[in-house]
Image (tube, rainbow, N blue to C red; front, top):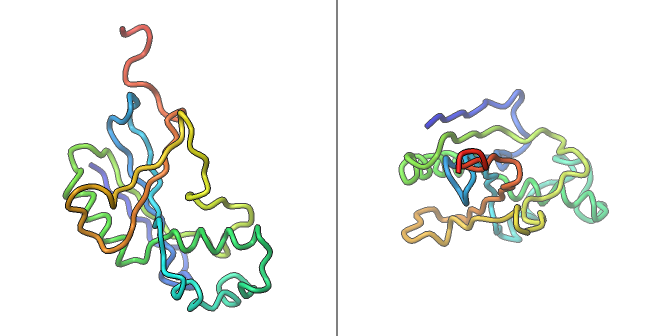
Length: 161
């Protein structure tokens, strides 16, 4: 399993700035399925504690609905410590099932129009994994993953059957 943790080009304006994805060798009949991990829940007090005027140029009260998506994208991200614990957990629990774990910092300012992963629709190709529901889940924060099966080749092609 390959682990790639990219250092930020410049220091992010807050520590909650790291995204993580993993690639599962075999998942729901597809190979090397990329799963974008995110925090499924957060504390309202944490959200209100950040100075969004400095981070995104506007306070929460000044933001329009679409601009608040950037706030939610940030709140779905991990701190450096959370990222490190998550990578360690994935590496120890799923090392034989994963081909890679990747992490990078969000770009700041977060681009307009970015959709929070929690808002991505689910259907026959798109879905969520709830890691926090796995027995003996050791982390003290919720981790979910969003995947798109249509972006990955099937394990068996029609000519291989």
